[in-house]
Image 1 (cartoon, rainbow, N blue to C red):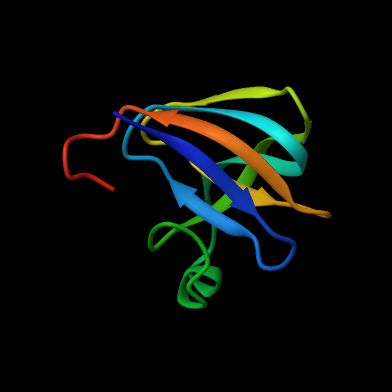
Image 2 (spheres, helix red, strand yellow; image 1 turned 120 degrees about the vertical axis):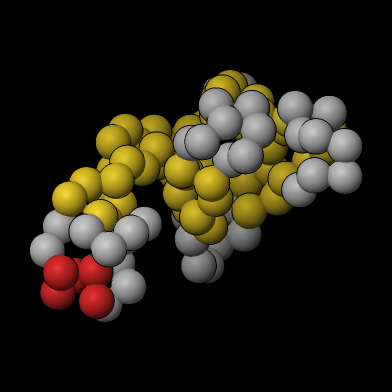
Length: 101
């Protein structure tokens, strides 16, 4: 298990695939958190490197505009996109395996 603080600054979005269960609580600022899901696509999009596989692309399944005090659970296997307008700080606790990342 691991825990700590995660700071997100304005700029490029972060895409993350969870290999463990994790909780986050936003303690300051803002974050736009989107759960993504694979969707079938055509070979042209796959050739451009869009998506998770030859005939898949990622689409937003659910998106939340998080504010101070909001808590989130990310199950193992979740694909999540993090963005922020002004910066955000979250506390996290994850069930990572020993020596896992």
